[in-house]
Image (cartoon, rainbow, N blue to C red; front, side):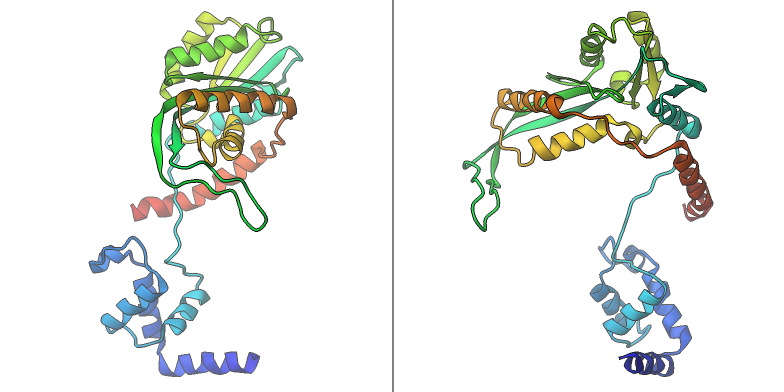
Length: 308
């Protein structure tokens, strides 16, 4: 087998000069729109067809794939990226990670200081299926009807005590400053948070709790509460998103809830269920990991800026 691979590589070198191989790779490194194609990315077949049409090479599709594989080129794959828009990204993210480690401004948190992670899931839809969802059976998974009727939308708000695994949740018609305020009240009027020294609220930059105004609004209403904003585009640092992921997988997939009342009952019912089994999440992403990630991004951002 090894000899066959060597012979095949030798044939490629003889039949196809390096300039031709490089030209094929150059085509693969362009977006299809560059050649007037209504495609967002190339498949191997589409790339091979274009190379033939442009008379770049008459190599076979498998040979072209082998050339690309040698340089780890995969134009049929894609992933998203985003710049750090927040100039204080590192400092804000580090502050949140410190709170997860029960540290704030270099000082260990006291036993009567708490860290709450909070957010909302908006526009959750009640979807009534045309036919009843079928139960699993030997050799058959759960089956649910593709067609549905919309039964309206609700918002689900939740707050998670990072270190004590206490979950607070509520259903509202929509998100906003007032619904979020009711979630905060739900927590802050409950012990031990009502008499706590400080309750740190970690939130993203959603409109319900964005900007300096939201910080003042929080402290004016609750003297022992402190709002801590994540950097922009950093919801992945918010632990409540882990709970929302569990909720989505366990309670809302598949969605066979015909009315808003049924949807609300499912949401609040799952919250009650989860409270009985909740444990603090094993958060492993540290400040050291953050520093390494940002250093890696910094190495790539000059290239991205030039490309833009």
